[in-house]
View 1 (cartoon, helix red, strand yellow):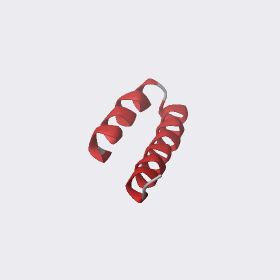
View 2 (cartoon, helix red, strand yellow):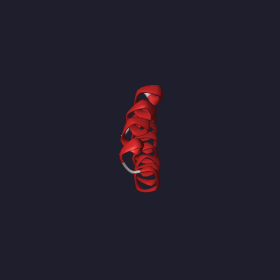
View 3 (spheres, helix red, strand yellow):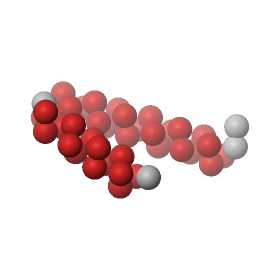
Length: 42
């Protein structure tokens, strides 16, 4: 596994964790923020 692949996986994992936290705290509104966060990251 290359460094760039590892970084991408770590970033994705962090995004998923943050997205789940937002989803739990904000309910349906969290989904939109999660998608926006993924778009901004990539």
